[in-house]
Length: 360
Image 1: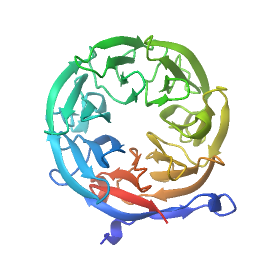
Image 2: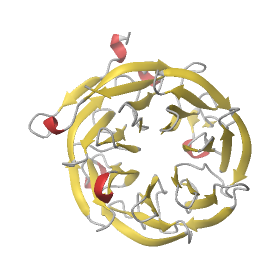
Image 3: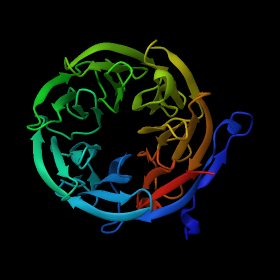
Image 4: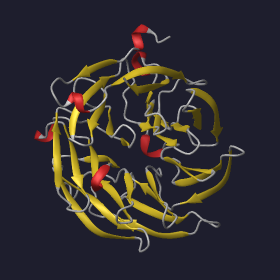
């Protein structure tokens, strides 16, 4: 049974838009054993095995859950954990960070600029690949057609991306530096329609109002196009239908930029929609089953929320406010049953758990 102090409050938006998509409700909370989780990062659902993975810095581990039964299964240790200086966590040097699953392996970024590869049959780290940076290897994506991985060192100056072959030997295919990116580089995603990676660049040339989306050819390990993005400061990026993608805009009312979420089209390079009253986002996820985008809007003014966006109308249909200190910056979804997972930290009365939501 959910504790009353940790119940999430759903804020429903009225009108015809809300009728187009099923609202979410919280159906479970999965407790996380070990140390109270005060620091965590990326989460990922392997759609084939229905396993949910979380980068749990507080326990220096990759946590593994059953996404069908909502149970904790175990963890893989061997990461640097939450690195603190003067009692404060330094995100740029902490890990694990990014995580995704390729076949029987989890590819996990760590705070020492390494990629650690986990054999999911033995739950052991079998390889460590240095990317050559000084800070964390953060968000990542996978090209299943060419079998190429991309991982982003977002906190190095300048930030850079590393492309690695996922076959035996894990050959480094190339590195791409972003000298004009003045506030890091964030979430990439793969577009199967054109075979390119799309990577969020929050800020270009120290102009807070101007960011971009770098279009990267995996085979050439090169940027082939930069799509301009204004008044968004994009962090998250996830593809939906019709080559549209949602950007997790981190703007939250500062620098004269109100909170928004931007939807763009990869083919035209143009903005399809700018959604008001939802911003402060980090990760974004898309559910084909639910036909919805989800934003981890942990810095939304007034408190962190999980944003729910209908991917047909590109309209905001729901905001789910998370009680306590469980700011939902990380989000993943299972297309087996449409369940959405948002980790909640232990700070300020948070649950130190995984919030599980389902369409009503």
